[in-house]
Figure 1 (cartoon, rainbow, N blue to C red):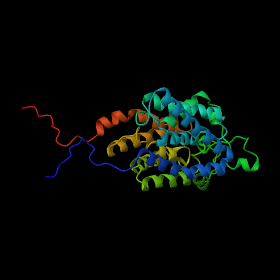
Figure 2: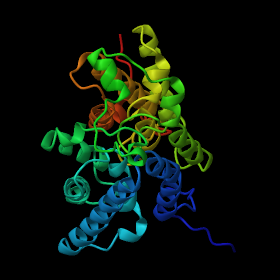
Figure 3: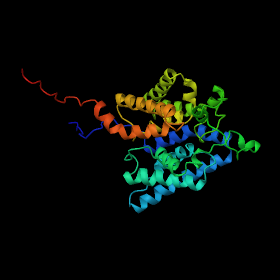
Figure 4: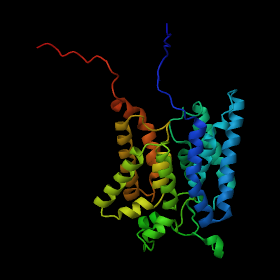
Length: 316
């Protein structure tokens, strides 16, 4: 007689491990890393190495102190380090970058229990803390290819900064698409980010629901507001935020309807900050704010379990 095994859900399991998923994310980030080297020079790789090393050491030491198992091999700390580096200007002091890595891992991730327990994105939260701690250093931008002609010590304005200040906007759509602008390491080259995002979708690491809804929301609001939708889509940290940060498993909803509401909120808050706040960019604050609202979103959008009883109608 054949024996039947009874176990708790989930009954359908995936062969994907955390390590494999994180490896896919690292591969998807490689085009942006290469682009950052092309536009900003060897210092871009140095800054990325500093943040990655800071995150790895912070994770290893904090887990040791807390007497928990070593989670460095799952590669999540490396992903956090790369994402943090991509949200920093190339001119930032490496010690400040290392401090950001420590904040992302120790304060945002490990103090809440480690991977899968943090309620906000570690890299974005670390960036916000760095922006408030070192506002001057975090808003100093160097021009693309400045390291080749000796002008990397000069400062320039980002496309969104020019729009906010009402200056003469001289950037073409091609400049924005290829990354020939000032900005954070990993946010300038739209082409590299789109390639990475498509790779993650094809590999089924992320669902297209969040990035497509996020980008579409920004484009529609930009069009209604009389702005250039392509400029808003290709400028700032929108693409890296939509593909790599808003889609974080831990801090985004799990249901389809929840993801749509979440992404709509990200898009609305991003454009409200860009148009009306003193900051030229709003991606970081928008995603972190929606991260905080995820439990509330899931409360109203999660499908009810099959067979659950409905409240009986009151008799007339």
